[in-house]
Length: 131
Image (cartoon, rainbow, N blue to C red; front, side):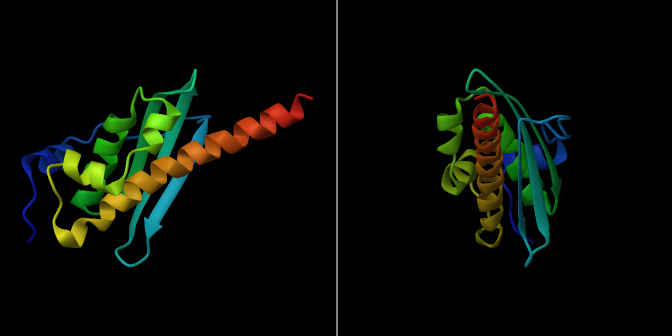
């Protein structure tokens, strides 16, 4: 059994920001068919900042911990700052992940980035529709 840091265990047993945001400004989904982990991030954006973040994760303890820490790392950040969250910064924030669970940190960062990309696409459409 892999050895997890106290921070991973804390975020696994008490995950932050779990849930769904109705009428989310952006939604990003990322999964790994090999391990079966699936993460969905929902974001609300206000004045170019992440005003609210929720996630739903189907997966192992590491995947849940990653989703929780990513949501905390991104909350209140500008979109540009949130896009700088990488698998490495996620793993570092969790004080390390076992090698066989490092892929979970990829999923968290990618799902967040997809939610931001989704928001930006919706904004472009809205701006295009106003002309």
